Length: 143
Image (tube, rainbow, N blue to C red):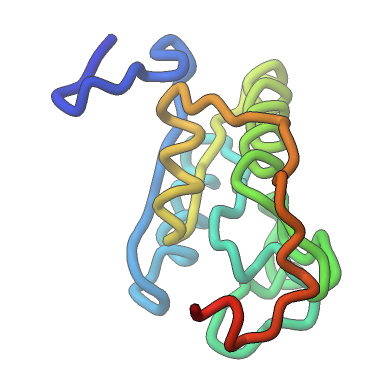
């Protein structure tokens, strides 16, 4: 299947629900109600919620107050990188696992590039950068 943008849809046969939008509009509450109704599990798609301890401004759900299973929340230390490619690989495995258990994957969050990496057939290179920018000053990088 191709959309107007010309991008290929990753797998049109896998049924997933995506709820997206800005912080604090009720995505979490809606997703919890729908997950209960349709036997779903949540895959977090808010880039800030992947990181532990970043709780202010992220509206992370209180997992002690729900029986709905959530994935990819508080999975890495704040100083570590978690790329779109990392997310895509892990979330696609989770989608397959959730579907294999006859449940519905709910992708919830506001990080559009991460959502698009699941829906569309984005291909990421595994090559490393050829230039190491870590030894440059801010002034050198700006120049």
